[in-house]
Length: 327
Ligand code: AQP
Image (tube, rainbow, N blue to C red; front, top):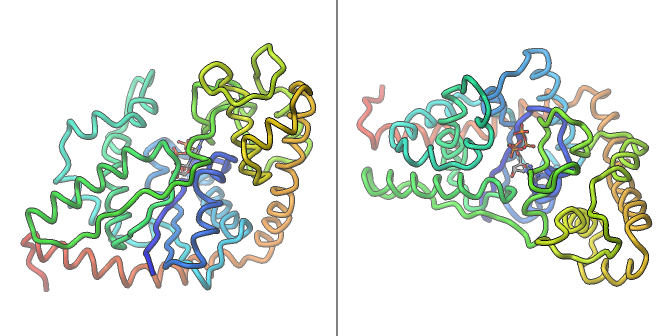
């Protein structure tokens, strides 16, 4: 069995970008792999978070994992902060990371651009992410396209550690399917759809009410043409919507083009909204039941107990190899 690890930040309401790029893949992979799915709260605080909002979002994301179909008897679901080994290995790997490597990270450039003061955590967080992955000796990392660079850094750090201290860390591989690499914003197809975008019209949240989904899609920016044709260069907005359609309806791009030939954008956008509602409404229903049941705390406790066994073992061995005295 391969080991699979991934996580999502509780930094806002999960979007369909998070669902396509990450969560829907978690659900698929849990059947044939040993899976660890975190809620990465230590990453979330690299941007300012109100304590009450962080608590609520951490619980909400955990409940959404369950509602989307992650089965806690198959996968370990836990909060990153519940396992101190993440921060510990994170520090060890930070000391092996070069400034130049972090300066090249496009996510850091995007998230820090235009800000007056930039937290050091935002800069060094890729080393913590490397620790998240290496702690579990993970083989496969299901993430969206925006995380590719961070996985490459993780591989470089694993290689650096192994060369200096002896072969130890497993070399992780990025797991991506052909669809769902990167979902773009509904108001600007040059930007990634993000849960922390202050404009709610730029994203569809997994918990948006059906009528809100319909409204947001009807207002999604498109070009002035009317041909539903996949042309990311010249028609990036429609190409983005077609990618979303393809994922939710499980249809190929060619099938979508054929279905909407000669019909214009109106019917396409309407049907897309219904495809989203058909998948998200049952998830929302389950989400409400899970929140009411109070089962999340128990799931997180069990997940952390399972994950801690492996994480503690790994960090102890890494410390031994680096020359720390162990009691
Ligand atoms: N637009 C996207 N398209 C495809 N995949 C995406 N992911 C995020 N946005 C898209 C994937 O979701 C997972 C969790 O992401 P994250 O919460 O750890 O951080 P992020 O990538 O920074 O996501 P957001 O939504 O943009 O959060 P904020 O706004 O808080 O920064 C990752 O696998 C990511 O690739």
